[in-house]
Length: 223
Picture (cartoon, rainbow, N blue to C red):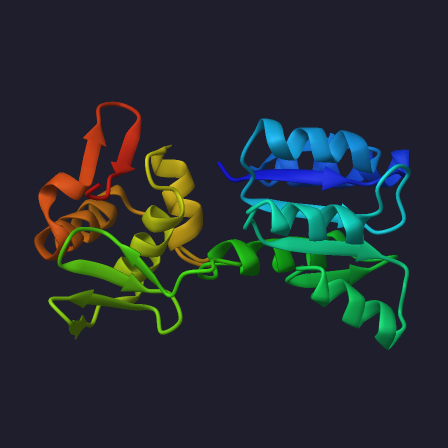
C-alpha cells in the first residue's frame, strides 16, 4: 500500500481527497498546516506528497524546497489555485514533479498520482545505484549494468526492479507490488509475479530478493 502525505488547509477538500484516496487503496496521512507536515515528513517515509501551496505556517513551496535539501526524494504534486507561469516555474524549481489546479476532478488526481508512483526514481543525486560489487542500476537510462554491460529487462521485470530499488530493506506486500506492476485495465496474477521474481533472481542473484512468509518480498543490496 502506497503511503501519501496530504497537506491541505481547506477542511472540506482535505476530507474529500483523503476519503477518495483511501477508497482507492492508499494510506493517507492528512495535515492542515506546513509545520505539521514538516513534522510528519521527518517522522516517516512517504511514497508521494500532495501539497497545497498557500498554507498556514510554512507554505508548500518552502516546505518542499527544505525537504529536498534534507534528502527527501518522494515525488510531489502541488495542489494550487495559482495559474501564472512565474508560480509554475517557482513550483518546479522548489522540487515538485507535477501540479493540479483547483478545482479539479478526483479522477484527474487519481491519474496523476498513479502516473508518478509508477515512474522511476526522483531527486536522486547519484547516477548509479549499486546492487552488488558488479551490478548497478543506471537511474538516468533505466538500465541494469552487470560487469559494465547493459542488460535488457522485460517491462514488468524493469518496473519490479525499480520498485525494489526505491524501497530497499522494506517488506513489500503482494498488493503493493500489484499496484505498481499492473495497470488499472490489467488483472494482477500471483503466478505471473512469481515468474517475474524468478527472472530477476536469475539475473541479480537469489539472495537479493528475500521471500518473507505470508508478508511479501524484501530487496537487499550488498553492503
